[in-house]
Amino acid sequence: LRLTEGEWGIITASAPATARLFALGLDALSRAGRSFSSDGRFHAITPMLRQFLRRAGFGDLRCRGYAIDHSAGTAAHRGFYEDYQLLFKLGQPFLLQQGLANQEKLDGLYEQALCEMLADDFGALLYLLTVWGSKPQ
Image (cartoon, rainbow, N blue to C red; front, side, top):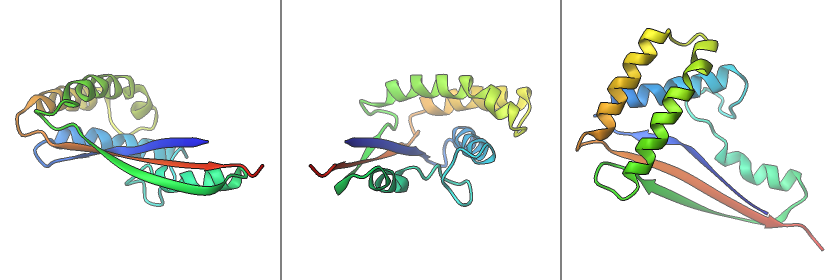
C-alpha cells in the first residue's frame, strides 16, 4: 500500500493574504479536531503516515519526500492558482463555522490572495511525503 499526503504550502512574505488564508485553514482544522499538530501551525499528517501503515499491519515501510515549486513562472503555477481559488472560496463556510473570521474579512483576504498569487514575485512550495509498505505473506 502506498499513501501520499502533503503539508499545506509554504508561501513567501510577498503574499501575506495567501499565507493568512492557509493559517486560518490550519487553525480551523485544529479547532475541529482534524489536525495532527500539537499547536495548529501544520496539518502534520505526513509524520503520521508511517504510523497509519504500521497500525494496519504493514511492514518494510519506506518513504520519499517531494517538493513542488508552484511559484510564479513555474509550470505548476497555473494549476495551483486555480486549485487555491477553489480552496479559498469553498473553504470559507468552514472558516466561518469555526468562528475565525467574518465574511467581509474572508472576501478581502480572498481578493488580495488572488492578486498576490499572480504577482511576479509570488513564491510557493508544497511538500509531499509518500510512504509505502507491504503486509507479510
